[in-house]
Image (tube, rainbow, N blue to C red):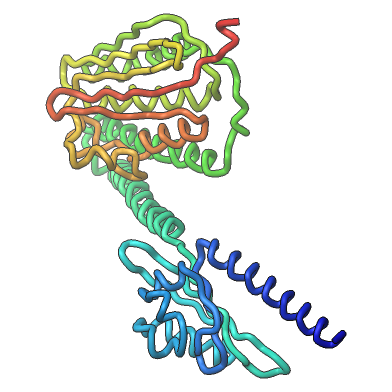
Amino acid sequence: QDLLHTSRSQMDELSLRQREFTAITENMREGFLLLDGKADILSSNHSAMQVLGLDAGEAVGSLRLVCRDPDILKVVESAISGSHAEVLLTRENVTWQIIANPVMSGGSVVGAVVLLIDVTEREQREALRREFSANVSHELRTPLTSISGFAELMQAGLVPMEKVQEFSADIYRESRRLLELVNDIIKLSRLDEGGDKLERQRVELHALAENVLANLESVAEKCHVTLSLTGGAAYVTGVPALLSEMLYNLCDNAVKYNVDGGSVRVDIAQSTAGTVLTVSDTGIGIAPEDLPRVFEQGYTGENGREQQRATGLGLYLCREALTRLGHSIRLDSTPGQGTTAFVGLERDEREYE
């Protein structure tokens, strides 16, 4: 009777462990497969069945018979042979990393554990970084080549005196473009590293906007664009450097992608919900199909008067800075009429105490 009681207790314990194991694996986002030495499925979860395109009733028998993907079968065979194996599998715009490891007992392979992990976001991020690196390399090479070429001609005495000033202006222009690109890359690097420690302060937005517009006056004059600021004092909680950089990039774009005689207006409006900062221009606007892409790294418009100097990082930096501060940004645009950026900011409650 004691033996029967012990066996029953052991069975109950095993049953409990099995239920716990099933509950854990079924609630995993990752796919999970446990196979024996013949590649028969011993255990699986719903996520794995979805990736494999199988129904619950097919989660039995040999994986070799039910799995139709040769890449998955290849890593499984490697694991059963005693070797760790991995492969990336893309299905319906989702990328899965398939990891297979052998299960050893007494020095022999008795099965394999297979994990299927959704790495779509990681792969997209890596693809974006590779594209960005390629774009930056090209953007750096272009002004450097121009500067080197102009300087070489001048050093060799091949530039007539009446052309020296023109060549010097070209070198200065390309140097400024190079400096802008390097500065944007530094800002992006700081954001990626969580730069400035994101220490929040009480910021008076109207004064900050006045300072930004003052710094853009000379650029706006050269482009024959009028700058204006409306609205009153508004206090928000944020990082002054990031808010200033965000507003500068928005206004700088509004000037660069404007028309002769155009205007840029910055407005600050408050409500009980918070503060909305609006930057409106009368410029060339953005095509509807391009609007979703303007916040991408390296994206530049095609018709801006200063497009040849654009680094494609301005709006990306704006969105990154705002996202890290918990704020929001939205763009409305009509080709040929202009663009409006709406920035939603949380007010500083101490203003109302």
